Length: 318
Ligand SMILES: [Zn+2]
Image (tube, rainbow, N blue to C red; front, side):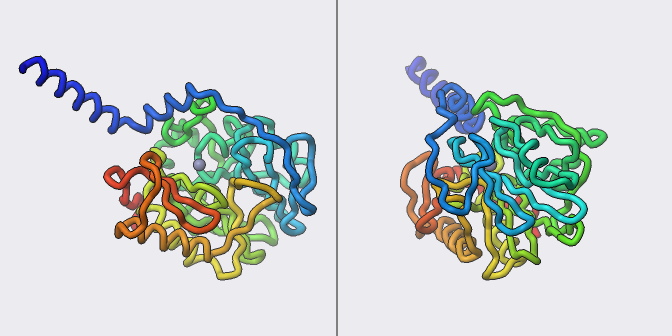
């Protein structure tokens, strides 16, 4: 009996440690699974041109270009937002191929790189940019040493595809609510946590464009990652709805299929908010166990952890 008791206790201990460290364990497992990084070229429709054999360009207006990576399996979309004095590159993909020469061919203005968040597939392989601006959030800025920030594995997740976790220099801090003046073009920084607690979106009120990173896009929204929170997701949805209009065009950082760049609307953010409320009150049932997948509307699912592991904490209450 004593031996059985020891075995049971050991099993409980191992299971508890595994659950507590599940994100690290899952990342290690993910790093062992080979991934086909490139997918087949598809018809991108009439609004998209090929910059080379990897990147696509889609002009959203005369000063905004969506730089797509339709051959990378995550189908990233990065945005070059050009003002009279400077330009912003919002996200840079995984860096499978360098994006900076592409952006530099599209504008003669100095380019500031702004990541929507710190996941590896948005940093262009180690943030190889001269001028970098990031979200001024206490859990990030407090760690920066003379403007140099060392990311942590759970913020970056690069081990999934063999990327080292980077350390980089920050030139500019962006507080939520800040207005970024690009010269005859202003962008508002909106704090949109949920996918991660370091996520921001950029809003151009004049063009009525919102660049939403991984907060919302067409496809599966990941809310089961190490610094994901469903409470944060609700807050992020509210921040978008407070700061935008019914007509705002929302451009995310990934898509699931061509042609070109999908446009979402604030009605999709309302659908997401309603879905979160129904998850919270138990009236929306998931499919699957890990991740637990909740349907949001015809083109979005929310991938979360199962109910007993779901995090509803709000990182920075309003
Ligand atoms: Zn992400």
